[in-house]
Length: 276
Ligand SMILES: Nc1ncnc2c1ncn2[C@@H]1O[C@H](COP(=O)(O)OP(=O)(O)OP(=O)(O)O)[C@@H](O)[C@H]1O
Image (cartoon, rainbow, N blue to C red; front, side):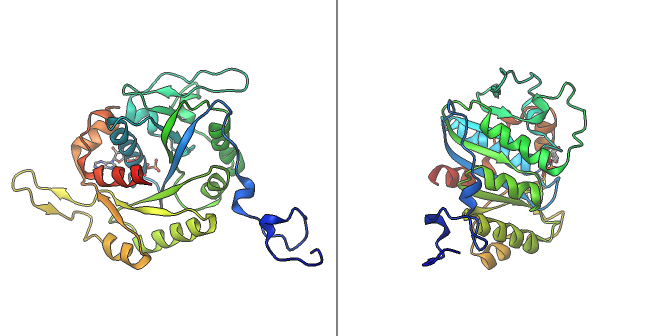
């Protein structure tokens, strides 16, 4: 520690033993030909709660409003974005740049599945390689004139999501939960991670929240009563939307037709992202 240390590491270049790393120290610059105005991270406590569905629908809804949207699929070991959009074309590139693939409605996407020779090939890489791939998607891809980029994060709050948050300048986080989960614990972890990174949480989205009876319209809580409101209140967060369990949603996601879903349950969430 230098004499007269003010403990403000941000304004000092000395590499002393008590230096505290600032999250901004690890940020990577995007490709010089990229323009990205806003970056939103979408996280979940575990896999399969619908994080990719929520990411895709938000990109679709904002695209319908005329914004240029993009999805960086950071879920390297479980990439599902290209499948949801029915994109099978491979990404092209040069020696040191990669071009995203455009969906039918003009959303730019980049995913490891667009680079693998066969999309069913498993990715059996270790954490640092996975995090490095995500960073490459940020640095080496030429993202064209993007108003809002969504980053579909790897599930959980472990090492890989942490590294991703350190290297990409995320403006806000959306946490996707489902009623089957220990919501309070998951949201608590996401809040801690967001605080460590100095990134605001925009709010919570509950997926598979209820099933709407096709005959009487009653909302049935198939996976148990939702606790998302009380959790949101506990952590001072907003509930941005609740998505029902719906065979139409499953069909659209699995058949690559996510852009045809109305997606009205996430209009509020899309509005919040637009305002950020
Ligand atoms: N509300 C819903 N109604 C019906 N099916 C849904 C709903 N949400 C998600 N699904 C289905 O569940 C599957 C998993 O969804 P999704 O890929 O979005 O989850 P995920 O949290 O991103 O998972 P992972 O992190 O493991 O990739 C999808 O195939 C989709 O068809």
